Length: 169
Image (cartoon, rainbow, N blue to C red):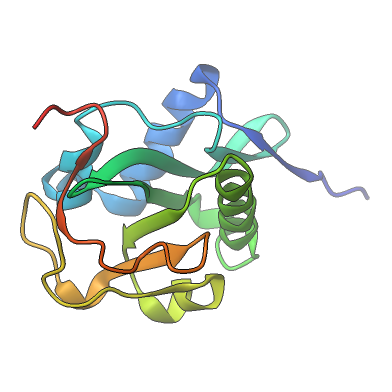
C-alpha cells in the first residue's frame, strides 16, 4: 500500500475555488465580518508569497500573505491559514507558515502581523503588539494582534490603522 505524498507549492488562480471551500469549512460565514477579512477586501493577496498543500492534486491547506500598511509602515497580513479537517494536526499548516514567512523574508519584507492565538504562532516568532498601537477597521481582541519581525527591530514604534497597501488614505 502506498501513501500519497503531500506537496507544497505556490498558490495559483486555479486553486481559488478549493481554497474558498477550505475557508468556508474552517471559518464559516462569519469570516466575512472579521476585521482581517475587511482589510483583505481592500485588494489582492500576494500570490508569490502564498502557499498551498496538495494531496493527489487537490488543495488540502493554504496560507496567504496580503500587503498592508500600518500607519505609514509597509507590512504583510498573514491569513487565513486553513487546513482541511481530514488533514489537521499533521504539521501541514505549520510547514506552509514556515515556507511563506521564509519567502517573505527572502523578498525583502520586514514585518508580518496577524490576528491569532499566541500559543500557536509564538514558536514562529510572533508576539503581541503593545495594546492599541495597531488598530484594525473593526473590533479585534488586542491580545490576539501578533507581529513577527522578519528583520530585527522592524516592529519598533510601528503604530496606526491597518489597511490594505492598495487602499488610498
